[in-house]
Length: 392
Image (cartoon, rainbow, N blue to C red):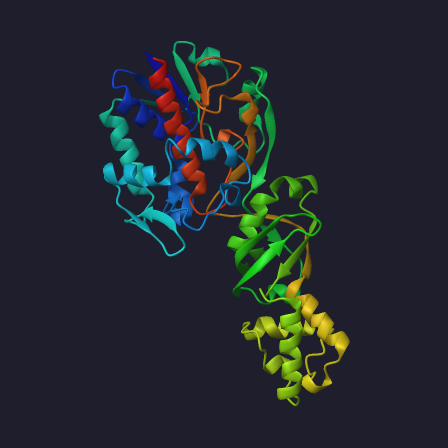
């Protein structure tokens, strides 16, 4: 029996290797349209490859998978992050867990995983055809099973032939990107990192975590998570949207009380020289000037009720205008792909074409940064290997 795997990325190789381990007699061929396999694995995580996550800080999969969390909850019962960790360790790739629960190769080099995959592919006699673009089932008609693992398709060109076979396509749009914000005063804080909650006003979309101010706008985990959850919303609005930043986790009453305490205890000091919230000094100065219309020389004793209300509002609901998106260099993720309605949720087999399967980002599944997209690739690929093995 023969299986064709269309796409030489993470999901494709993981599927090929596990299929050969489950069915040594199966002939497996990987078709890769470019001259390089595992290209995304090589550059991900700054070249270190954040291959999975402990999920210890995840109470619900919807937190980390804006799309596909219900399907993955089901599939994780068969192969989850602990299984992935054990798999890599068993196959000669020691892993380490960072404080943020992200998991990397101990070597801190993506080539540890690439070399593992290529070595196993060679050992199991998996054929790799580079420069071979599959555009129809006729191109792989000699195979008993076909698995599409082509990854995201930002422009949708890689999905057309699958759409022609009757599969519903969720329009692909970018996910995991940073925000362009044209605010020179904000950009003057370039390099500053602080924990915030970022929100899209008028929606339930929000994300917490470190925020990085850059020379073009905003980045960091909070922005990347929000961009993932709001991917479709922002695309529909042509990446022109309001953004609200909550700089403190305190309530408005707590902030108001602390401000009035300073009025009483530090009346002669300038607001900009002392702040009761532990914010970085240049951020505090920026927020005070923004709230009080650049009146940076205001003393605590001069603070009136209107000033206090403005400061509270800036600290809890500081608004900006997103002017566009900028790519996140460590990950290139697409929201959209083959609709999950078009596949069997237990096997990932097409409901339209028997023996045709889908794994990885070609499906309408995507996660936030932190190793979650690779885990989805491992889980969906392993599921298909099991399904084909059971179907022989």
